[in-house]
Length: 197
Image 1 (cartoon, rainbow, N blue to C red):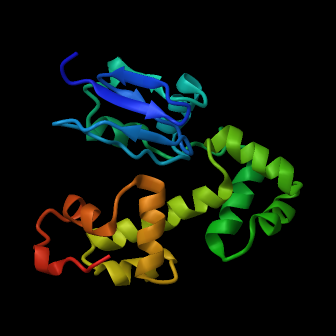
Image 2 (tube, rainbow, N blue to C red):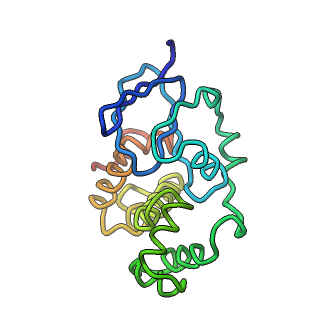
């Protein structure tokens, strides 16, 4: 079919449609496509919650999302209300975002066992809190890049030890390097403005 996306999941199963939903933490390989639009959705927004309900744990065909626009994602990308996420999960997320503590420490602050907190995060966010924390750091670093910081400066702003740490995490989470992402975030960036990875 013209315009379809083809992905292979970790088990070797092939998925194809004009739009596919890939939940967090699902390993996959995408076939080359002449035109492709990829959306990375904030895990704690209402749009992501709807996608989780729709697809569960695996890659899901979603042809009706073919015409998805940035405006659609922004409108539906508002953070979930406090009534949607468990208040204990919110407390743990706030503790993790506020300072550099382990997930076990955040669980204690939230009044949960570490195992219960992990299960709650998986169910309501679709990813472990350690991954959510990396996502938050990547988001901060991306905003810093948009604001004009160099890749090295954005790495520090995002909370990474250095540029190499930022590069590894970005590639691990999204399959991209900061050098590849920078022109998308800052289209006016000249090639000479891009730091090496």
